[in-house]
Length: 288
Image: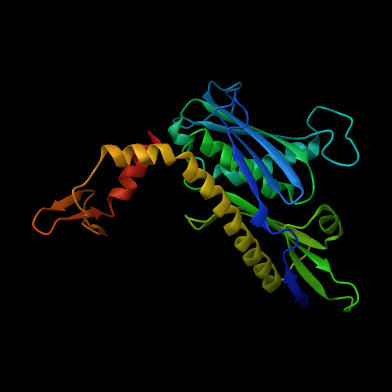
């Protein structure tokens, strides 16, 4: 096991910037700043797919395209076409989002996610996943949950022994380049499921577990920023429903196992019992 001197967060997400509706032609869009990394995302569709290979019956397709702007780093790339590293990055983002997007809700069509990294200041994957998740929400694409991501690196700490290391949450470009190993977690906090875990370098079990737990704590803060934006996007619909459906008094809503997919209203003591079996039924209807 690697000795850990301490853990710290050099770039806290308390100053995360999330803006939606920034591309007027897109079905949904978002701009995200995490520390020194800036990302723009546009979502288009559902629409007829540009290619039909790989389409599954009764399901739509999620396509992700990530590009690094020529001015995103100090050394310009000098090219516009997507490179091998960007294609690999696009695949990572696709896997992070695929577990959350409900493809059955847009069969035979595709939702296309286009992301541009405007400034690469380290931990670009978390910023890209956050922007894509916010843009998909803005576009009204059905999702099981919001997806947030965080990167943790293991770095040597100078002056405290050659084996001493520290775990850094969402490191900057310099810390990321100097890291001995790293792990990136994509996580659905409300559902409590990871959509992707990518580890590089050599880890022992205990240190990797520490790194994943640290990444999960960072994901929780990113998720809070995304959830706040999602609630603001739905505020008008929530207000409209509250105006149209007005109950004369507060009525308790209880969930219980009934042995059937149903719900019951008891007039005598004015309560509603919602059968837990209804959850799977409603999920199935949402996919149609």
